[in-house]
Length: 355
Image (tube, rainbow, N blue to C red; front, side, top):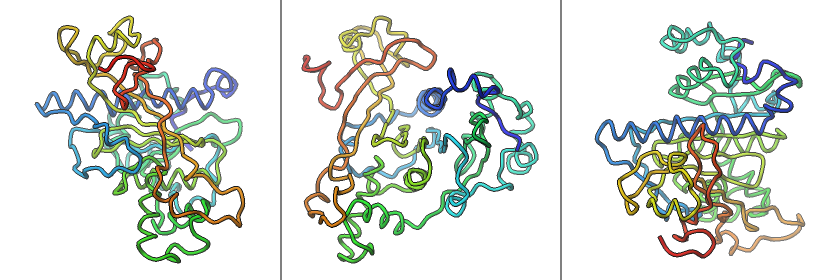
């Protein structure tokens, strides 16, 4: 299997390039590629950037389905190990879409002609980042995994399809959480529709999610049942945000915000160059920064302690996610601390003055 390796030395990976470190490096790359570069693409085309509204972070909120053509998309599945063979039915990783020079020449000849050979590329290599940057524009997902226990995490497949009936995915989650006993429609169609909306809320997406968001949610569900440690990254043209789902009870969103310069200083930005993507003049002008919000699943989205217990319908009306952390992130490649910023509450720090 010819792959673009994230590390060429498994012993080094155990320390400096652990799964968490690789995941964080990949996340930083995607912030640059899907958020910051997309922002500049909007500017180059003289189009207003669709900044996120606070209301969109409300658990289960619906969102407009308009696709912004200047927003880059991405879908990457990363697992700490080899993907179990039993998942091939739903996550299509086969020899025909393995990341090899022959397959790349067949599926994306324009990329092969521009890039160096695939073998032996490390995450820090410019050639690796150039390859990843081009692969993001391909349809479907990219898969990163280990070929063996001692092997480094590597890009193994491209054009990876995630295929599963929505009803089956919703039924499994609803059953596991105790909202149904056996079948999705046992409590009627209206109840089943509500469960489908909560399914997407569980993974941090709007009730009308589709495309890459739907694939990301289903991939995360499948991986959580069979993989010890994983991360799924999804960036979509509808909401201009980067979402990470992993093996924890958290959902992480990244998107761009406009924040006044004086607010950035008030929350601890010593050097604005570490945080600002684009800025206006003066303290009262707004700067564009990268914002990260982490959410965790509430009690209504947790399995019941006893299989014999019965869920209340009230739990289906409760939020399934709650915000646990809000921060302004330093720019990729800048070594500066993340800054706490309660954007949803529109306050500085813990109880500071309104913006």
